[in-house]
Image 1: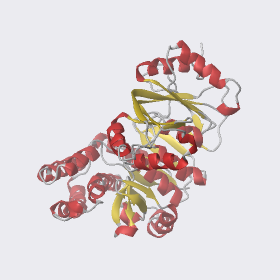
Image 2 (image 1 turned 120 degrees about the vertical axis):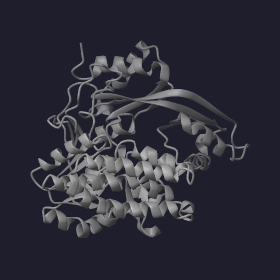
Image 3 (image 1 turned 135 degrees about the vertical axis):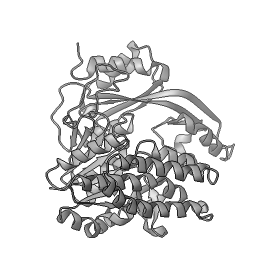
Image 4 (image 1 turned 120 degrees about the horizontal axis):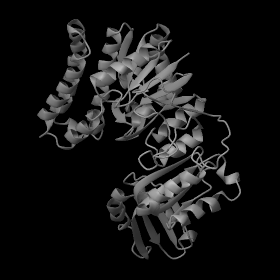
Length: 456
């Protein structure tokens, strides 16, 4: 049985957290494959440093080195530290060379290289900690293990076919020998561009672990984080939210994409392709079973399973005469928005208007791009800011008569106006937009009336 275990930033964020991770790995019966994020706070530190080079170079290197040596020295004894420092100095030398190279900063993949350094060192500490605990382990970078990425800088995707082929040669032999591979998350190697690092975006280590599970045809993927699993609502909004014991892939993907900050949304597809079960578990409470996600789930008798909320959004509406009959015009608008790699959460059209739901922070860049279109093609552009998207998830919502009416009756009770609706794109969710000031009240009412375990 092959188990892939992924540890997030908070599960790697301190010597105590690292020691918990070691115990969790050691109690696994078979030799698992481990994927790890950078220690909490390190990626933000690297992003900030990369944006302020060369002025920040010395502080960046000194702060980075100190954090990792301090953590390792609290876990490893004197002899173990000597062995660790051999590997550490080798990797640190490469990091220094990168920042000392005056031409490197002009490389479009430079930030990918810098921001992925955290994973290279967190996995090194975890690997040596496992060996100190008596395990056979090897620290592998994404380059070593054969994770192949493709795409634009800071926004890569895994090439699953090539990754599977390379990992069969580079990782499988370790597993067969009972050696635990400890692999860097967050990035892959861009083989079409000299094997340079290409990151998968924020939260991409979850996705990396799913890619590894797919490549190795694993029996289980475990995501170890700092929460008990998926919840019926955000506990900060709904105090009596309950943990969801079991979900199917579609439900988990919708919740992850539309607000639940438990799992990176892209994590689902690589494991769904091979029907590999996934569990979300709390490394601070390893005795808790967490949430299991797989292709089958027991039928839920309540109307909704969970209600998620994504805040700080805006609706940008572009009006043009009979735009519905001008697909080329809509295509040009979407192309302009896509130039900044903006995430579009919903799209709505009418005869003369097309509206997009995007993050508040993206509005300025979008307007700048849209202003380059022919002014004769655009009659009006309007922006409604401070909106929130509510995602109501349940079994086969489209086949249940009257679900929309029930949900929007609750919205009316909350005295909230529905600004945008998305229904039909998924059979497990109904998504709609309300003013941010009313969103928490809508979530509370929906949870109170229609989520299992909370009906009065």
